[in-house]
Image (spheres, rainbow, N blue to C red):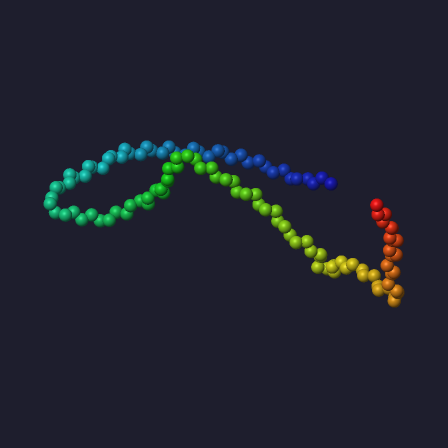
Length: 117
């Protein structure tokens, strides 16, 4: 289905007027020079003036120092365990045989006579 959209009348708004020009600033006159200092024998007490923070000290290095790259991270070794839901595997033990005589030792081979020359 196609919905019909009612026509909206188009209203044209005139562009805003440009801002008024800014008047130039009056020239700034330099301050008058300070009066000359008087030379006296009296001690002059000067209030302590805070100094700006000192710049960081940079040590000059004669030759560029080679920085070794960091070693690669060691592989993470995790212990191998059975899942907690499964029991450890067991090896079946064969049942003991009923009372049987122990197997007889194999017969010894016959001794061969040694020929003496």
